Image (cartoon, rainbow, N blue to C red; front, side, top):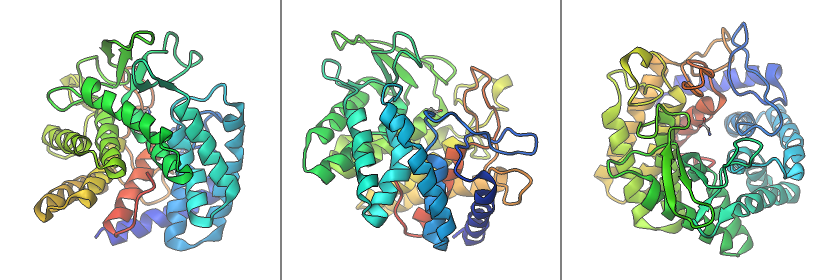
Length: 369
Ligand code: GLY
């Protein structure tokens, strides 16, 4: 399914690799649709390397791997710097060093992934049972901030426990996931972007809008992180409550979509702001839905989540995809942060990553997260 579009996308990644090289693309905002190049600590810096690994899996083109290896080496700077590292180490090192290790057994890459996992584990607050999102250099007074995106970083902890035989990483991941389950997910099966806890008592203080409209709204990419992240936590632990949460948030997401199935940046967006879409939310959700489908025992349920994912991928191909070289991104219409007027309706590298990952899953291949 979608074989033609898949091949076109992989060929585009190949052509892009000659132009983008070992840099850190995030958003396609150049005059001719070129991607930008982010500073070395940026949270999205693992996705281009990840796309190269995904394209390598299909093409076995060793030139793609050479670039992925260069990227991984450059990322030693933020890894060793340590001080400016944040919770997004999973987004950075799962698609790069961890892929390298899993595919080749490289000891250097294994150590990189273990170091990244240790940084993430070190951010755990045992009083509040959560992983802290950022340090003060990114957000002042942030010792109590929990971010839904972190559900996609804790897979690194599950891997580290399996790799080392030490359950501490998994204990931390599950404590964080339990906090999300009990204190972040709302009764209507939606999530806010951020929640503030008291870092000394562990008490929940308030929800915050973050990149969503407000504290009570439904930021569409946040729902995607929750769906996919909760499905992974179930896959790694067998704890059914995580699976129930993933499925409930997924159903709510699917029932909140507009007719063309491309989510607005926030499902609670005012009418005048609905021109801002987020294709990256749809592609990440599609990959998450296929993760759910792969974990369902019941055939009917498996088909339901597969069909949901196909609906989203089909909509992305019809409404957002670009396979020629008029721009570098594959998916148009991603939105980074509407409240900050930051990169609205533009190609986003993680949108492209999860789009290809979802297509790979439809072909029967495993995802990277
Ligand atoms: N992790 C921030 C975002 O999803 O934009």
